[in-house]
Image (cartoon, rainbow, N blue to C red):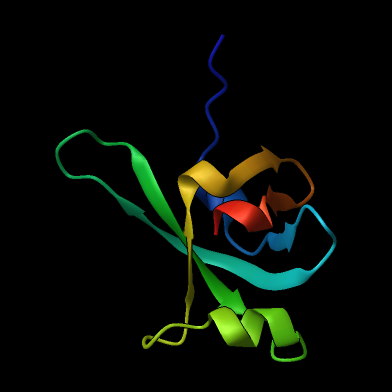
Length: 83
């Protein structure tokens, strides 16, 4: 059974790595126009996190591939090895 989550429920959720590093907060997503599948999570980096600051892109966001997401509950947990 597929569980559907409304994007509005995800906005503002903390994004952390599976080994406990805080990356920041979910702000947006990149979705394929062809398939409609979620490709990338856009995360506003936590300014106090050295890991997040190293991952920051040119547009000031961290791009997390959807394949790296391991769970979504109170937090969005991502596998750091897949980043």
